[in-house]
Length: 290
Picture 1 (tube, rainbow, N blue to C red):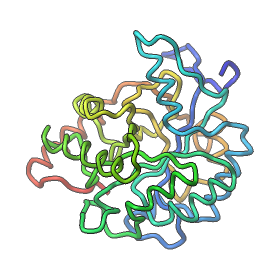
Picture 2: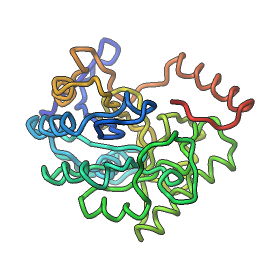
Picture 3: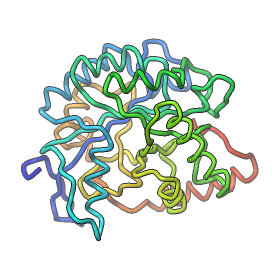
Picture 4: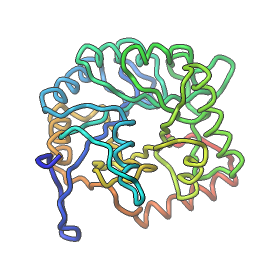
């Protein structure tokens, strides 16, 4: 990875290779209003994928990046290899397009990806905090594997994990993992935090539940020094253009804006927002933070 795009700052003059980890949700032309901001049309999605291919970056599933990050922690024998210029494509929730046209568009370009599924939203008879939307079914998780899409967990009900009690947090992490493992017949090792919300206690619980990695959001580029249990992602909105994708592939911010490179500590506003949400949850109970 010696000649991959690198970033530095005045505070941190050491320049490190950056790794774009993109976060998609639905890919559809007419999404429900609550998810519209984070939905791209099939036409735009195809153009995004073509820009990824044209960038010369090598798409890898999150497991490849996670193995590299975990092997970098103190005590590891050696670092797992990464391609020279990696990129990771991820999808959250499990919308209906995912095991169909979205997976087909990825497979047509031989692009691996990772999908994090909210099991309560895709299992008949179960519920989640997600508002109504066309969703895939849990049984279709096997179809994702056929398309080369790696499956991870996105909890059962999509709560703000950093506001839950320890028992409720454990249930969300374990029951989603168990449901996916029963369906797929293999271990589920990777997690996405709903809304990206996490804390030190949540990250510790994810490790204790048997996950090898977890992705957050952070609106930042990842790097080979990122933290295995809060890997930074760039959330894709409907307003993002092909030029934005090209900029991210070049290791820069969208539309010329400077983008942080993980790892970095949580900001004071982030810490304050966490305290506020925790207090609100104690009054209202778990809720969707759309």
